[in-house]
Image (cartoon, rainbow, N blue to C red; front, side, top):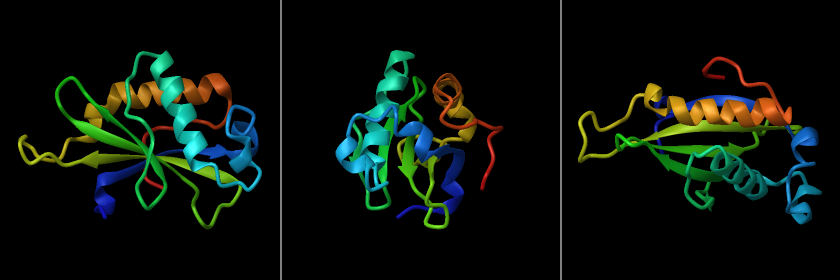
Length: 135
């Protein structure tokens, strides 16, 4: 598990709007499409030159990982808040690295990643990227 201080929510996405972009329609019908959302996001980020890991399930939803040129590592979590069934949330999590100082990267280190996520959201119209904020 991770500390909530290491997580920043970035955007809420309308399931209805994003489902048109998702390839895995077998899961989309149930509204439980975290893996599809993570694969789609990874592909969209790659088209913009931002490399991520292959999506993986982590117990709280699906995530893709990204490392900056400076060595800071982040995970983008794709999950559905229990209180909001029609929405999906993208959250940014800092990943500690004990071999670095400071061991936990600052959120500003993810500015290129967050800007690319904003482009994906704006270009597709599935949600609205707001200033970095905590929900």
